[in-house]
Image 1: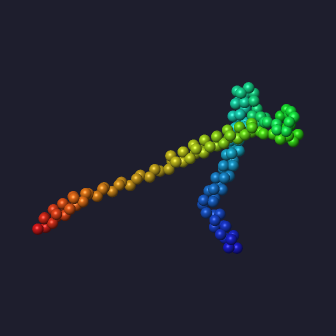
Image 2: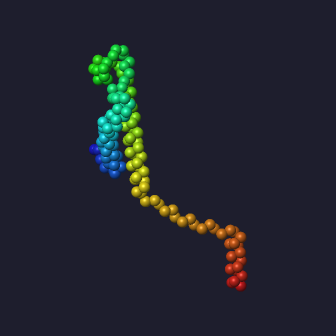
Image 3: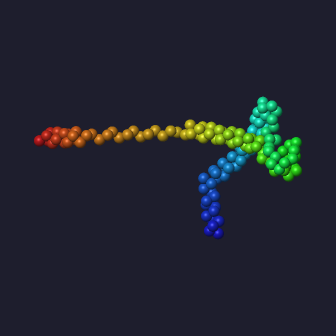
Length: 140
């Protein structure tokens, strides 16, 4: 029972809940960017490059000729899917840029701390001694 109480205390702290929300939103954002790359960005890029379908770019390592990546997979061929890798790299770049913009925006919203004014430097030792002598002379 003590372990359950400790776990409840741990799980209910604000940081853990914030992290969980961040992971859930991040997963959803990842799906959105994957769709953006696969369905919106890569088709025009492929068209500009002469009708290349990046999802169908692969190297067949097991020999034989196949009309598509799906046909090669259905036949059990060993393939290196470099088109999917290119899509993943572009996906990563978009996510990294979006996170950069998000952090930059959050940082600009935070109040900047005004540094406390620095204490004036202590007067030189000579001035302190002269002031003491002056004060002593005034008292006499």
